[in-house]
Length: 540
Ligand SMILES: *[C@@H]1O[C@H](CO)[C@@H](O)[C@H](O)[C@H]1NC(C)=O
Ligand SMILES: *[C@@H]1O[C@H](CO)[C@@H](O)[C@H](O)[C@H]1NC(C)=O
Ligand SMILES: *[C@@H]1O[C@H](CO)[C@@H](O)[C@H](O)[C@H]1NC(C)=O
Ligand SMILES: *[C@@H]1O[C@H](CO)[C@@H](O)[C@H](O)[C@H]1NC(C)=O
Ligand SMILES: *[C@@H]1O[C@H](CO)[C@@H](O)[C@H](O)[C@H]1NC(C)=O
Ligand SMILES: *[C@@H]1O[C@H](CO)[C@@H](O)[C@H](O)[C@H]1NC(C)=O
Ligand SMILES: *[C@@H]1O[C@H](CO)[C@@H](O)[C@H](O)[C@H]1NC(C)=O
Ligand SMILES: *[C@@H]1O[C@H](CO)[C@@H](O)[C@H](O)[C@H]1NC(C)=O
Ligand SMILES: *[C@@H]1O[C@H](CO)[C@@H](O)[C@H](O)[C@H]1NC(C)=O
Ligand SMILES: *[C@@H]1O[C@H](CO)[C@@H](O)[C@H](O)[C@H]1NC(C)=O
Image 1 (tube, rainbow, N blue to C red):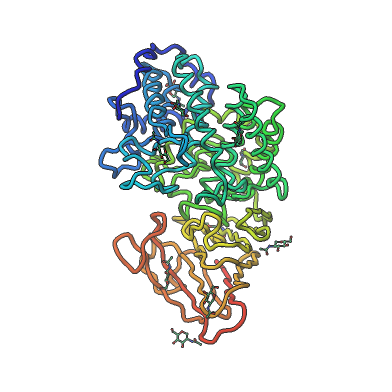
Image 2: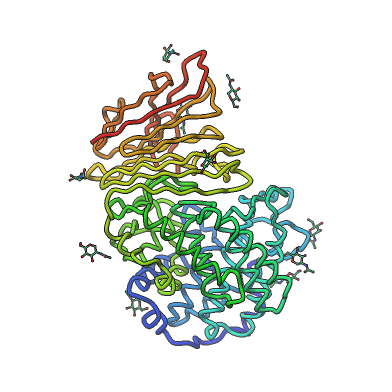
C-alpha cells in the first residue's frame, strides 16, 4: 500500500531552482516563521516513507497526511539539497492514496494517515470528520495550488500533471458536498471550507479548461459573497483558528485568479473588512483576540497555537504575536505545521491590509467598543449581535444569538464561546467564559459589565461559567479568590452556586481543549418562571 507510485522514479530530478526564494521574496518575519517551523518539522520527517510522523506526537509512529503536504510546500520554498525531490516524494504519496472510487462520498478526498484501514469498510466505517474529513480536499488542494503557482520550476512535468489530476478529482468530490445532506454541513456560511472550495474549483476549472468547474467555483463564491455583504463579516466570525483559514482562502482569491473572477473582485474587500474587525478585536497588550469566539481551540492564544497568531507573526513579528519561543510546546501545536503557507503568502498579504492595521496590531489603541453582526444560516434564525468592550487590562465580548442547535453551528459546546471576559493578572491572561447550554442567548455588554439572559430558558436552565485556573492562587474557594479582578454576580438564579475543578489529574470534570478551569454553575430556583438572567459586575 505504501509503495511509491512508479512515476516517482521518472520524476527523480535534481533541485532545479535556486535557494534564493526565501531570502529574496520573503520578509525577515516570514523567513523566521518558515525557518523555525521547518526546523521543527524536519525532526518529524520520515524520509524512508515520504511522510511526516504525526506532529501531535502520541501516535505510536503513525504518520499524517495534511501536515506532510504543508511540509512539502516548505521544502519547495527552502529548496536546499534534496528538498525539492523529497517534496515530490511526499506529493506522489499523498496523491497515490487519494480516494479514487467515484461512488463514495469521500471520493477525491485525501487520507488522514497512510496506515489507516480502508474507509467505509465494516471494521472502519465512514464517519465524516472522523475516519475521513471532507475539508481535507480543500486544505491539501489549496496547498497544491500554491506549489504549482509559486514553484512550477521545481516540480517535474509528470508530478505537475499528477497534481492537476488530483485537483480535478478533489474538486469533483467536493461538489458532492451539500449542507444538510449525508451528514455534511457545508453551507455557504461555513466560511473557511466554502472559501477554499470556491477557489479550488475556480482555479482548477480555468487551468484545465473545464468551464463547468470554473462556473461552479464562481457560483459558490457568489453565495459566499452575498452572505458576506449582509454585514461585511464572515459568517464564521472571530476565531483564533478559523478566521486564519478564511484569511488564507481570501488571499488565494486575491492572488491567483484573473480579473474576470468574482473572487478576484470581492476578495480584497472581504479581506480588508475581516482585518478591520480583527484590528479592533486584537488586544496587543494581551496578545489575544477578545471574545466572543464562534469557534475557539483554547481560552488564551498565548497558550495554544492559533492560525491568527501565525499571521500576526508574519505581519508584526514573533515577539508581538501570541506564539511563545517554542511553539511546539503550546496546545494545538499541530497547527504550527501551517506555517509554510503563511510564510509564502505573507508579503503579498501585507500589501492588502487596510491603513493603520499594523499599528492597531502593535499598539493598543485605547479603550473602545466594537459592534458587529454576523449571520450563519441555516443555524442562525436571526443575525447575531456582537458587542466587545476592550480596555487596557480587561476585555468583555459577547453575542446575542437565536439558533437551531446548542453549541453554535459546529454543535460544539467546547468551542463556541458566546460570552468571554479576559483580563491580565499581572503574570498571566485569565478568562471567564459562558459554557453554552441554550439555543438562544441575549447579552448586554458595557464597560465593566456583562448581562446574560436566556429568552427561551426555564427552571431547568443553568449558567456555567468556565473560569481559568491561576498559577498565583491555585486553590479557589469562591469568587473572592479570583486573581486580578473583582467579580460580583447577581440575577434571578439561585445565588448559591456550585464550584468544581476540572483538572488534568482529577477534580470533577475534564479540562476543555487542555485548559484546566474552575466551574461556577448557577441553577434556577425551584418553581422558577420567567427569563433566567445573570448579571456580572467587574472591578479592579
Ligand atoms: C532563513 O534561512 C535561510 C537559509 O535557508 C537564511 O538564508 C535566512 O537568513 C534565514 N532567515 C532568517 C530570518 O532567519
Ligand atoms: C466503489 O464504491 C461503491 C460504493 O461504496 C462500492 O459498491 C463499489 O464496490 C466500490 N468499487 C470498488 C472498485 O471498490
Ligand atoms: C481520479 O479519479 C479517477 C476515477 O474517477 C481515477 O481513475 C484516477 O486514478 C484518479 N486520479 C488520481 C490522480 O488520483
Ligand atoms: C458541473 O458542476 C456541478 C457542480 O460542481 C456538478 O454537480 C455537475 O455534475 C457538473 N456537470 C458536468 C457535466 O460536469
Ligand atoms: C507603537 O508605538 C510606539 C511608541 O509610541 C511607536 O514608536 C511605534 O512606531 C508604534 N508602532 C507602530 C507599528 O505604529
Ligand atoms: C440583532 O439585531 C437585529 C436588529 O439589528 C435584530 O433584528 C435581531 O433579532 C437581533 N438578534 C438577536 C439574536 O437578538
Ligand atoms: C494594568 O495592569 C498593570 C499590571 O497589572 C498595572 O500596572 C496597570 O496599572 C493596569 N492599568 C490599568 C489602567 O488598570
Ligand atoms: C426546559 O426547556 C428544555 C429545553 O427546551 C426542556 O428540555 C425542559 O424539559 C424544560 N424544563 C422544564 C422544567 O420545563
Ligand atoms: C459544570 O458543573 C456543573 C455542575 O456540577 C455540571 O453539571 C457541568 O457538567 C459542568 N460543566 C462542565 C463544562 O464541566
Ligand atoms: C438554592 O440552592 C441551595 C443549595 O442547593 C438550596 O438549599 C436552596 O433551597 C435553593 N434555593 C431555592 C430558592 O431554590
